[in-house]
Image 1 (cartoon, rainbow, N blue to C red):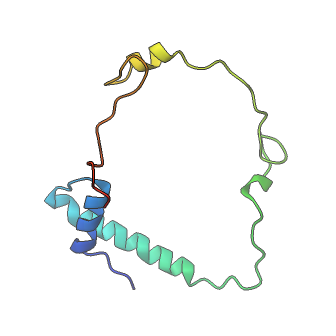
Image 2: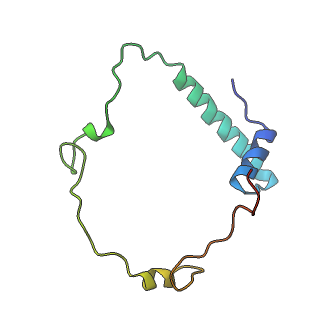
Length: 106
């Protein structure tokens, strides 16, 4: 059985660029271990002789018999109105903080 430990959590923090509070580490570790255990149980299920599902679009419902809806063209959002709601924007673009430093390929 795969076990999530503090080293894995530290690695995930770095990848996600987050810092967990010390009191968050144990609950998250337990939750991830339960998720991994569930996935391992699912992988152990014998599916021999069960035909694969071709597509989720095979379902029927309000969208239509094939699970799709009609493509309807609508007017675009007003750029100025959308940018006015952004926390940081230029005249034409959203501005976001840099998440990868120059030369940082890891």
